[in-house]
Structures are given as structure tokens and as C-alpha cells.
Length: 116
Image 1 (cartoon, rainbow, N blue to C red):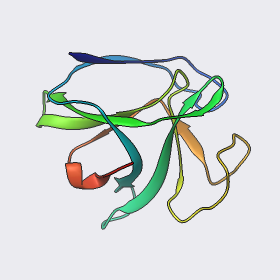
Image 2: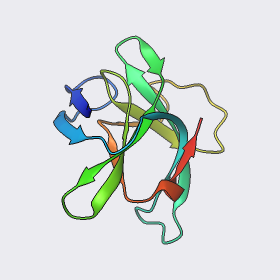
Image 3: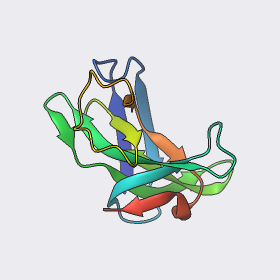
Image 4: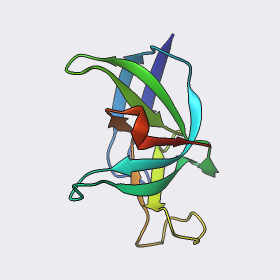
């Protein structure tokens, strides 16, 4: 089984991605991810899938990774995923400065994912 990430530039994410990953497990819904960029201990962010119709489910799946052996891909709708601070109670929307879009994420450890 494979996971296909195919996201064209859109209102949520200006980047594009066209990737194929070989699954090493079953996809599962995810609601939080830990990101280490600029944060030595990591910081939790809420994640949702994003589609041309708005919020959608976000999923993660363990996949083959040529550099690490395996990793976790976090993916969403046809417009990718959106993230916001984990403690935010704001609704998901494109005009919120604390939210941003990504095509997908590749995370090294299962501990960096909080299932839905």
C-alpha cells in the first residue's frame, strides 16, 4: 500500500508537492504534532487536513524513509494540512495569522504524533 501526497499551490499553502511513500503500517487520524523547528524540546501544534472545501481529517502513516529507515508522513486533503498552536481555540480559517498551511510533514518519531 502507498500514500500519495499531491498538493498544488492554493490559498492555504503556496507550495506544491507530489510524493509517493511506501506504507509500513495503516494510516490513522492525528490531531496534534510536535515540531522542533526553533524549539529544542519541541512544541505541540494542532493539525487538520485542509481541502478546497475547508477542514478535513489529518492522517499519519509510518512509511519507508531512505535516510532513517522509517518515518511518519502527516497528510490531509487536496490542499494539504493546516497547523496552529495547540492551545488555540480559534476556528480553522485562512485569515488567522497564527495558522499556516503545509503540503505535508515528515516526522521521525511516533512520540511526535497525538492520534485523534
